[in-house]
Image (cartoon, rainbow, N blue to C red):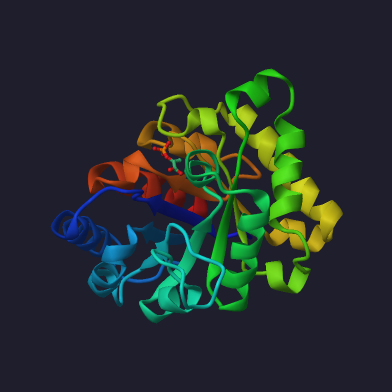
Length: 257
Ligand code: PEP
């Protein structure tokens, strides 16, 4: 059975004090690693060390929101995979829609980042998702296919072992509009089939596919209860323990059912 992953993407929010408070509350809620649910927070880069210290020894892991593909050197402002590892990051989010559509990252850049993270031993959450215009034009699946092919170009099954996919329809991110459980399940099923075709069905049965896009306490259980949804990538609702813990609880409930 696939283990649920509930990940919080703090984006460019929190400061040192508020991030520490949030992390402490989550660590208190999850004092030890849990069998059925993996819990992750992804703070802004400057706070990674502080937050990693705060959750150390608890069931909460730390990840980064982005990484650069070069190992080091003259790349002003960028952060390398080894640096993330050095400060205790287990995961890195790559290809978030804000990086694709606000910063302008291409599938080629995303692919280089995915390769660098895997080579450096940091697990990847690869985000894919269509714009509203793609969905309305009937192009959701072709957009997902292109992002998967681009992001995972030249990546072997062995290298993809620690990969997690996050399906995040762009029209649902930060908008309060959530994909219906049917829309989410249909996209997740499609992505799993893509993995089966590109790799094999054993691997596609194992890979985790998270849903992201306005996940909240009141929709988390239904969304994560879909057959092909293995957890959630949560933005806004990950910034307050009283909003995030109920989402973790929904995963705990499903995992123990
Ligand atoms: C996200 O940032 O990945 C996200 C899904 O945001 P939100 O939950 O706020 O829609």
